[in-house]
Amino acid sequence: MAATIAATAAARYRVLGVDPGSRITGYGVVDVRGGRLTHVDSGVISIDFRSPIEARLLNVFDQLSALIARHSPDLVSIEDLFHARNVRSAITLGQARGAALLAASRAGLPVRSYAPAEIKLTVAGSGRAEKGQIQQMVRAILALDGAPGPDAADALAAAICHAQRRQLETRIDGAVRRAR
Image 1 (cartoon, rainbow, N blue to C red):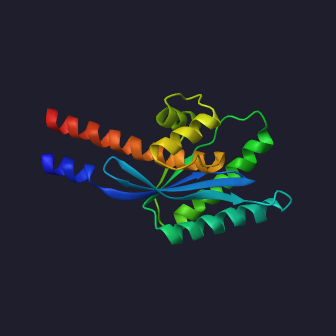
Image 2: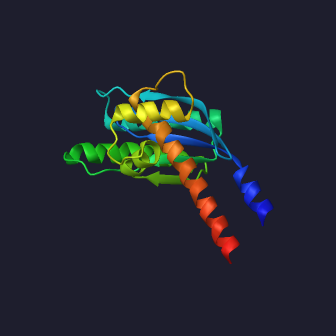
């Protein structure tokens, strides 16, 4: 049993984090090996907001598909929808999220969704953390020279959130097995 737990802790996988948006979609790729996280790539997909929504969504889909092909992630961790005051914005954000989900599904990748507050809590210790706090925590966790931009940081935070949640689940599962 200890060998199984050690093997799980040494597992290696790659996560593509996505912070969907109809004008800017952030992405971040993180390698996970045991408890160690390594930054691979991050940035934003900028979308011309004057373009029709269908062209913007196709752009998100195409660019995320290209990132998936280039980096070969094992799964996608995506920020879930939040409650918005503006219904139109929420619908547009949901459509951008759908384009990201379609890119992951087309590539045959599993997707894990996390609420914004859960990502913030996992990365910064507070579900109400501000953008700047997330940027600095992502910089510290991934040992980056500088803080990434806010959208890339949010995407990297989604990837970090999944890695930390998976590690916690693995530990709990191991503890339950040992207790039996």
